[in-house]
Image (cartoon, rainbow, N blue to C red; front, side):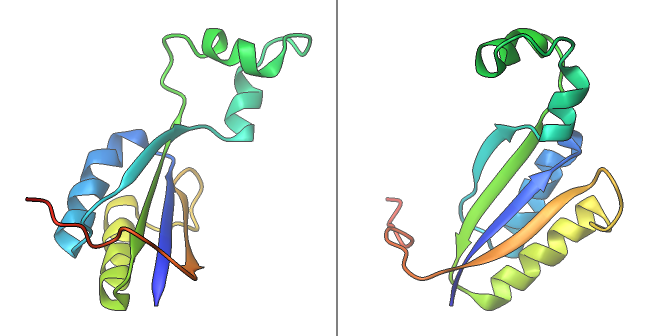
Length: 118
């Protein structure tokens, strides 16, 4: 079965370690997005009369208050399990606060997974 593995990593300093662990687990490619959550956004919004989207850049200027959202499509159940264990090995117990969120979604169809990289 094909799966989408998503990790919203709260501790940005562990980002490179997760990537290395996933690569060692057999992950071939990862897409990375800088993201933030509602709770972090609320902590940094000083005024509620500022429009949301145009103000985000100025509100966070110079501050590293973001998450990294990593996702990858995996078509091998063993690789999926190794990647989950690798993420837990770096991040720790996901039930603890300020670690992140990891989830897996089944993918009914995926194109372009096996490309030659000559």
